[in-house]
Length: 348
Image (cartoon, rainbow, N blue to C red; front, top):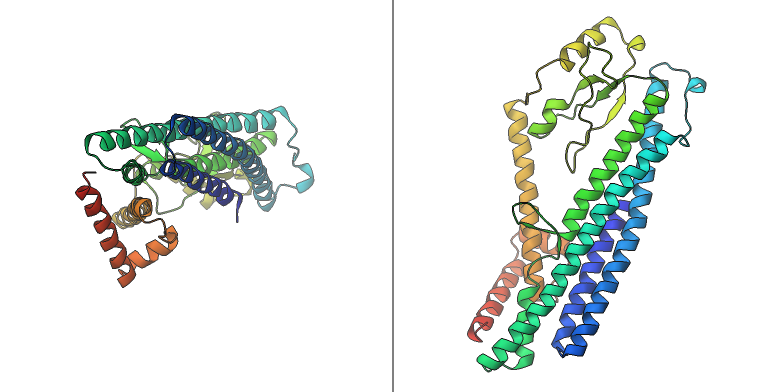
């Protein structure tokens, strides 16, 4: 399991622990029990924050070193003598760069933790309030009313971030974006700062083919880091251009390029900064985005089903059964529908 996978597993496990705490309301929703529950919720999130910070630090540092190593390897492969290359990471430029990325990443972790705590605590308070109201007004037993309220409250993933449009982003999904963005950023910064250390001004942003409209404007070009080489555009905007961006940088050493390579680089690098993807590439990118959207919908569906059917298998098994539209998946859909009807009959 990679370190990123381990980090996301921390969030999956923590979410399950938080859901277990919510489930415990079924046993008791007295004020003292709720107060203790809220303390336990905060302890789980504090532990998660600490472990996530440690894991993120390791991921960012290693990615920065890897970016540096790849820049060195590229310079050597293009003809620079290995003995003449500055390799140390102890310089101020490297220390400050890593710390800046870590500060930015840890702030995102704290934001996520705050949203998680607020979300779970609000759910607990809503469960108690709704169960009390149904018990008093509708005469439903306190235990049954609480059980129904818990199932309702658990039908969405625990919030990790609230987007500008008000959309609630699940914690695991948000942190997947955060860590992959900062890992790529560390890799790029490690590569670029190694170039700066070795007085290399020209940098190449790789071409990946199937990409988004934004990345298409920047990929496949040679840039000048300083802006002093007017033949090439200055590197004003560095990768990553967004979360999950796969673009990176590498040294581009002119003295080891032939005339044809230089001519092509000048042409590619000075093209207009517009989306120049082919219709085929656009269609393929849109197809991949639709697949991702389906995966997200399946995850949301699994969370809803799991809230009412605790014995449901893991997400991978559920997704496989759904994709094949098996008899088992049909049974799950019918069971979920029946649970919904039962709650409606009880006035939920």
